[in-house]
Image (cartoon, rainbow, N blue to C red; front, side, top):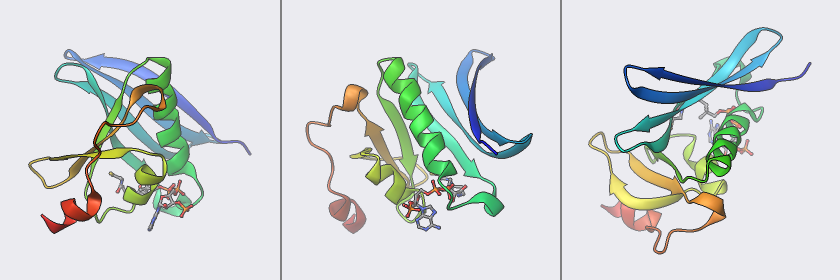
Length: 131
Ligand SMILES: CC(C)(COP(=O)(O)OP(=O)(O)OC[C@H]1O[C@@H](n2cnc3c(N)ncnc32)[C@H](O)[C@@H]1OP(=O)(O)O)[C@@H](O)C(=O)NCCC(=O)NCCS
């Protein structure tokens, strides 16, 4: 059985998003979307894997597919995460970096700079935790 990640580009009421779906044998195992919000900054959101299929690499495959899309489009990829979320270690391992900015719900912005670049001064997560 092979898992396939498909990308669907769609625009609803001027908001463009790229939907990612991991499908195996007609079953939807997980998905995510890349939202092009505000000035068009690509933001990875709604990453989700069906609870029965977790810890098998599907979440990572979805994030990597989003990173490939960003790379092919020559753009940074943004996301935000609560520090206690299980996805945090995944994003850190894939070299997303903390910008030091917080959202109004208390999650922290991270970015993967285009073409494997690094932020000039990534924020220190220990300092973010202390805030
Ligand atoms: C986060 C989520 C998408 C991960 O999906 P997944 O398919 O289980 O992830 P993977 O199997 O690819 O795991 C990748 C890495 O994520 C981290 N991770 C995933 N689940 C974890 C858990 N329960 N506890 C700690 N780390 C975890 C680990 O670093 C893991 O790598 P490892 O297995 O080599 O240790 C899934 O748990 C989920 O849908 N959670 C609910 C929705 C959510 O919180 N989304 C993220 C919003 S920011």
